[in-house]
Length: 399
Image 1 (cartoon, rainbow, N blue to C red):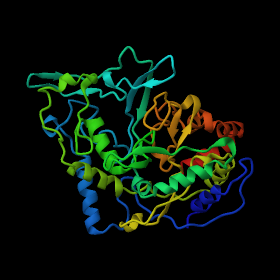
Image 2: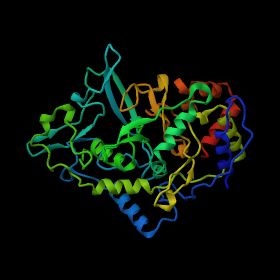
Image 3: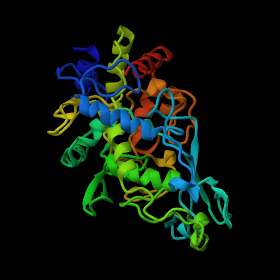
Image 4: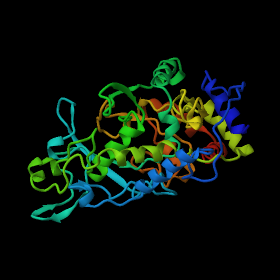
């Protein structure tokens, strides 16, 4: 059992954020992997074949004959999720925009193509010429969104909605008023209420919905749960005679393959926690960073053995928190303009930069940018000696 597992779960027991907890609970950990981009270890031949088929589709470039466009951001999933392996993040930062009126209400300017910019058009196809979208002059809110890594999200998907509801209630008892908010959304596949877990604003409840949503909004390809094209710059008249393939452009097969790949994609590989990293873990808990970056979660019963009642360590509660000035200004789904989903920290050492818009070049910069419900932890980090700050960063680079 890794020392990491002991210290992480120990951190959950911290009830006074100024004190270092002194108990430990040992839990079962998910199986180890050798590299980022691996499938979950020990998959059956059938599941491994599904993973490989999903990965192949994930890496396939689409064109207008496949339904790409008319506006889109890239031609394949891997074009954005490529670093350091398929399923990772990238240096790409997309743009969202909107307008806040004098009444303080956010308007995504959907009639002008908002809130997500599709930066490319498929050019000239037949008699139609479609170009990428731009931020309209009327917008007074513009935010960047970087690509999030997908490693281990099958484990997150396998956690029951009730777990997040209970976690939100439990967080109300924490110091620093850290209680997170469950993102209640509608599952586009079923039309039923669900808990959002994915995306910077926790607007997506499952990896299958995530797949369909991204296929539409990033590549412009419609599917059964997302059957309507994005109108270029909000002008739906441009779709008339300019959509080469009838909707839905994917019958659900591709979406299912993307979901298989993400579901079976292993979490970041385990590292051995050094003594300095262990010291940093204790400081991380003492600062009450664990109030939002929940170390451990447990999956519900699942037909896939590798996802069945597994304890794993994402370092996130996947809830919405008021981040004050660190919020991106975009209201989206259940999330207000200042609210962001807690980003998981596992594998953070592989990230090229940090925070939702990539503004932070280092982990220290990212911590010091925290505000709102993260301000108290930020201030504790700022008061640490440079040596102790280095211990915290060492810990983060080892999880």
